[in-house]
Image 1 (cartoon, rainbow, N blue to C red):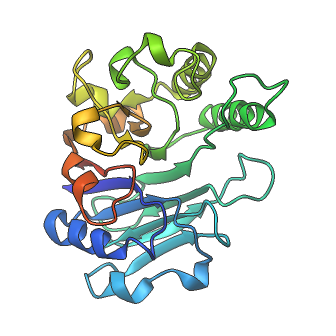
Image 2: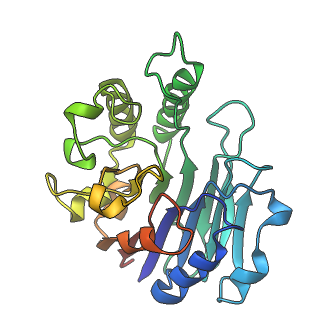
Length: 265
């Protein structure tokens, strides 16, 4: 069995205490972090090593974005794609090398948020987000091995992935154009949405709550921005999936919570 977790941590150095708590409680084999907000030499390697995580693939940049994959099981860095086409650190892929897991690829991605206006003519960031997804789609057409892609996709595709479907149809992250663009990415490889394989729609499923809400739990205006999608053959090996909402209540939390999927390979 191998367990993989994904979490937009919103600054790994600032939130290392809750990362440590999560790893001590859940102990996933692989943890994929997004928005680490540090350069590679600033990453807290020793804190992870103290918890038994000896393997790293870190793609960082100063102050913004950045992704990192850490593991208790061995892997080698497999790829770094510039789907943003501007040098931002938004992706790293690893290939597991442990016997029994060999050949499985875990892709860790942080899709741009896309700004506030869902119109690329007045908001270049929205156009960059759509173009990022188009580049991911062309890449997905070439995949030839069991692959898991995880991370902050910054899109909540289903009506039950948001607190109010009608209210958010014109809000970036849930617009029909974004949902259609993400669907093209799904179709390009036949990805299985592991979260929704295990938590069936229309059951409520959120992974992000804004910091603006004084009481996120009572307000519960969440969105499912974080995803774990698997190649068709790998999806058949997924035996469990969990959303760790309680982490949103921890001290100095991220606005996202961790997701964990278990595989029997």
